[in-house]
Length: 168
Image (cartoon, rainbow, N blue to C red; front, top):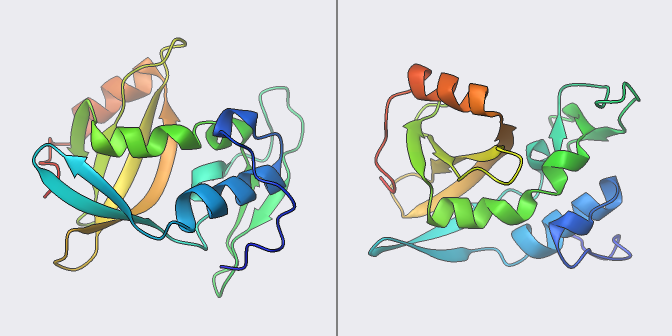
């Protein structure tokens, strides 16, 4: 990944203010280290982030809570998927690795072979859900997406998905 296009990188995700800050943070803090060695219980796993991924700091809704348009973000590469920047998701990027390390709930994700890892509630009662998928046989997991969950959404996930072992 070419990091030279980023003029700065926020020190923590809570300081992200715009798309450039989110992309710089994602590139420098999550993608560039390549492999994140994480101990889950007594097992060590490797976690990787796809350099082309945008789901972790975007969503499908074009308007924010105040009904203002969000900036459009295009996924680099062949797919050119278009989604809208979410400052709320971007500011929660720091929660992804701790959630992978110690989820409070692990469920089967809708993506085949993937696991939905759910973190504890924050002061506003929101939780983060992180979907990880294994890399064929190795103890390497790719982060596919991450999203916020309200208490109601959390309860719906518990009803709709079966528990899953973590790590597999």
